[in-house]
Length: 170
Image (cartoon, rainbow, N blue to C red):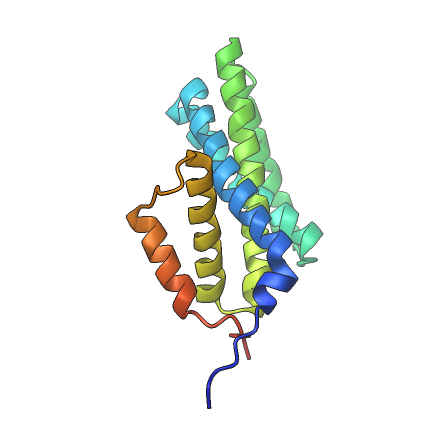
């Protein structure tokens, strides 16, 4: 009996997938690169260490996950430590690097929470393949060259072709 393909992953979660791909992967990584350029690698790394804090906050708000008192108490020293170090930042470029690094953390954390939401319903390989295909298409469109294809694009197309999108988790 042939496998009936349904595009429910695309139909139901197209907004989430586009957000993950464009805002999370593309803009989040771009903000991280700009933040590292202007703030330096050590400062950008310090700010990126806030990912678990923001993921916890977004998961509590968006996924309605329970955040226990230990997690809540542990968030404050993390935020305080980063604040103490970046509060002494002087210069426009350094402050610009901090802003871009914080934007990167927020975008990446939101994407991580959305990935968890979509992956809870569908097979992780299906979600990854769909996201990789969208990223490859977006990269190709952003390059301005119609025939621009890379090894990544071919891998994404291969995955997209063979992963059934009716692969709901049991």
